[in-house]
Length: 308
Image (tube, rainbow, N blue to C red; front, side, top):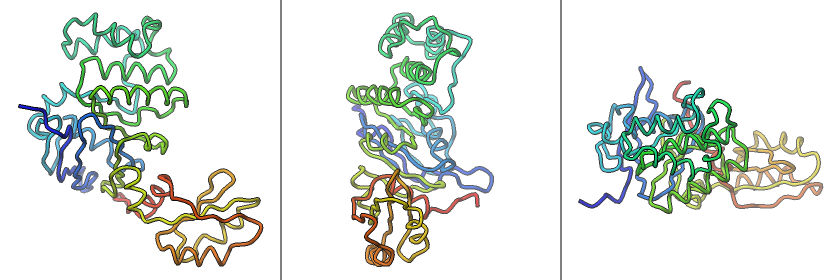
């Protein structure tokens, strides 16, 4: 039987804890070889959803498959073919890099374990540090070790939960270069992130807020579907301008970006009227294409917290 087109194909996936619905009837399809970004505020249900996909949690509702296996009935089979990188570094700090990888390879019963460990060390640039204790590594090197451990058993799907949090820009860029190479080789990646530049490197993305899926598609699709109009204000002493704009009809958000303000709203005509009432010659006012961050701030502002 040929592999299905979708590595992830689920409908109505739901999870409740007590009386709270933390994942609410999510539908998601991720194609094989795709990098799919999963975004949303803290507490939005992203990690819970990932744990249901990889067999660590059982959904309370919904159906579907991960790598062709039923997410409710074949969780053990899913675990064998998925690499899951958690938010928190979860390897043994008093073991060396090589010893950590060897331990993970033992868990997965990887054939020719020594060769597999050496290959992982070389692929992730860890060979020269193989005897260094994991606890002595910087954030970027811990990230490489975690990725190497996720790949040691040659998974078909990588689930990465905020993998670049707390690492420097160079380490983040190197990490993403590796992810794109893995995807080019056919590996599917579902990744959660709060960084907009990382979201823009995904083939497609979805935005989850307080358990609900609010939007999905390519970056262009997501920006277009928001129907957000944005004015950019440039000049000196922008704080009074921001204060004058906030609260006016049509103004949904006023956000400082360095020496500029982004003023956005969904009702273009009402927003333009608000801008006209405040606009002066001391500042430069231009309409600009709304960015991904403008869209996500707008979505967050309109979402209802399911714990409030």
